[in-house]
Length: 127
Image (cartoon, rainbow, N blue to C red; front, side, top):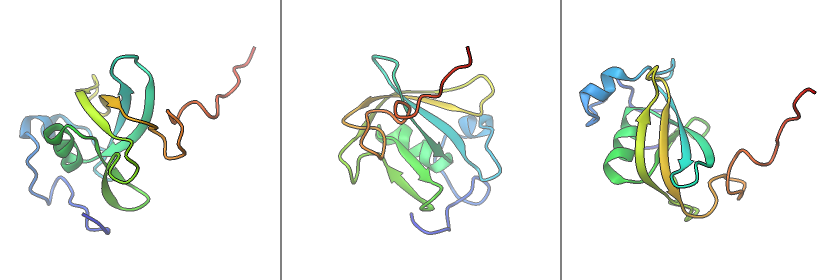
């Protein structure tokens, strides 16, 4: 789906389990942050955004689907880069406002080509 006609949880039919959808606490745009973590090492790879449809696709296909806020479209991690995220598990945090997606990352997770989005700019701690 492309363009700015992204379905919202209130207007689009979605196959996301209604019990899961009822628990999600979305932002004003209907999105929930999704942290991708390497399942076997615990390495934090990236942060993406999911709505009900992206979460449904992630849960049913075994591949991470995100909503691109900049491009205003769904994207499946690895479809263009080959750097696929194979989903091992998905968990909802205690506040139901963040997802943790444990994946087996093939190649780089970051769009810059780095393994993780969190290793290029480590901030100094005050002493």
